[in-house]
Length: 469
Ligand SMILES: Cc1cc2nc3c(=O)[nH]c(=O)nc-3n(C[C@H](O)[C@H](O)[C@H](O)COP(=O)(O)OP(=O)(O)OC[C@H]3O[C@@H](n4cnc5c(N)ncnc54)[C@H](O)[C@@H]3O)c2cc1C
Image 1 (cartoon, helix red, strand yellow):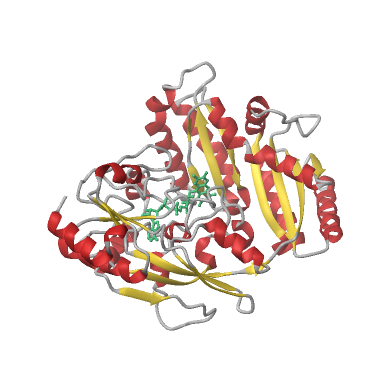
Image 2: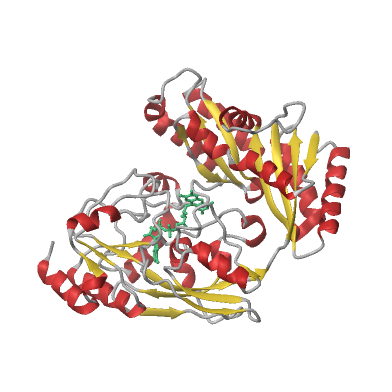
């Protein structure tokens, strides 16, 4: 603890914005999963962009590391400080004001500390959709979502966070304010610098405000669960459905029969959807602004075609909201069923979509060469090329299996991902969890450019040390 620095910090920001008591700091030092634990001399909770700027300027002068913290729902340990007692955790939680909603320009401008779920509800009340949606939306903050370039369930139709951002206000490590909080749809004036902050995981500065695109509300939904004979058939089904339904296609989720089996075993009240078991299943959702009958008719027509062409082996179309929700549960309960089953080695990967069937074959060979009897649970946002490639202990083995095999299995999976030109992190980022693999597998030239950008914006390396770079 540096008393001269802390006195200056408290004097500049005010006592109520700076936490220094170790017992009060403690809850800010761990990640959501409880995997990482760090140290800090203070937690700063500014209420204005100017206060963030004052804090960063002081930290930069004294060379104290700063760890930006949003809702702390990140899954890679990005918002958890390292063990240094010099760290300053900078929380945006008190910067939670919606600055404007415009239903003509279809934009929403908010402080970075606004909870995503609150922004979605505010947009909904104004008759618009903020499509960014994830299971952690009632805890995560829009600044954290943008800093991690979050994905979620609507990426197929609306893109990742990056595609929804029109403008950013951020504070650089030296305290300068980057004033890019515009709502223009068109601005071709040189490099688009706001993009640097999207996905930067707090390593280049602190995002303090975000301008987002809004979309029309989708009021009607229709869902089908299709049984497919192979991942290749799932790909062909995607081609057919996208061609026929275009932007109405909201979700195209895939899971193997092993995942279905896990859900039926571990989740109460779940029923087998088809008389027979199949290789895999695809859950397709269409959504539109109006006309439920037309949407249902379109879905039935396209699935009829898929059955006729042999792209799927069986299908069940939701006839009511309750049935729609039951079909979704078969997909959504997979994570819960995995938790009940015991520890799994999780890999959140993405691939060029056309390579998925081939990847599934060769990755399985590589993984089984390491552990022949392991169990594979593969599911995910197939339409985005994003698979959750999860590996679990052989039947009968105890939970310690994961610890022994983790490294070698991750290596096998990531090498196969690299072989097909995929990504080792589809949507969760790098943080501290995937830093080593990132540096091993990412193109060296691109890492060098990232380091040079970091050097320009953060020459004293105070921003989020030990994360990403
Ligand atoms: C149950 C659950 C489900 C999830 N589902 C998804 C999903 O479907 N898709 C998905 O993409 N992610 C998902 N996640 C991961 C997580 O919710 C996202 O990464 C989210 O965007 C993190 O936001 P946060 O506010 O919690 O950020 P934090 O966890 O607080 O921080 C994440 C990173 O961003 C930095 N950061 C935070 N705020 C700022 C800021 N204002 N300025 C600069 N840097 C900042 C931090 O330093 C850290 O590096 C899930 C997590 C959970 C727990």
